[in-house]
Image (cartoon, rainbow over all chains, first blue to last red; front, side, top):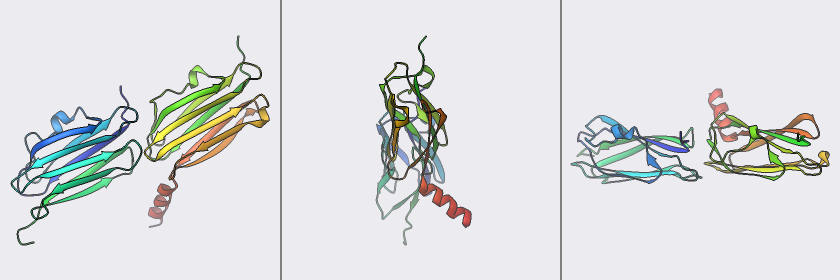
Length: 127
Length: 134
């Protein structure tokens, strides 16, 4: 069995009132974990629900890096994470701040095995 | 039957949350024992341990080797040399910032050394102590 050297577990919580659909997803380094066949949000992320995707590296000297691009009536959300072989984890997002707010809660207690809760919420009209 | 003339057992305790990976290892002089040969790509999980054994079976030849381990903070290099003059044993451990190595030497005699390397993460320990006080 291959060793898992680096892994990023991304939980995406849709705290908005609209559905998000998967516009794009790819790994730049590493691979998707096999369980992602069920976890990738191909059917969309319904309001107030969450999905989990895992990007991992089973190759020596390769980190885990990938992106998810989610679409909704409030606009796109682009999530891009990177866990290098040597160095700290980073994640960034792109979204229209007038309509969507994206927050990250990163669990780094195990530096080679990162878990991230990504919460996408809607910016209220009056805000 | 070949006789072991010099032997160094290296035991690494990973007292950190890092996943350590065996990236490179070489017996510069002497050889590895079959039960203590480093395997490239092997992992030492957090709070795990591993042991490697380098020996010399030829008179006048050192037991000399190095190991290079990877982590998310950088690389850990462990080197040792147990020469014919066994009292001139040399060892060195280099770790990246954020990881602290401590070496304890033991063993039955000068030509059979056991080198215990304990790797800790002082920042994590400080956090744990702060939480305990709180």
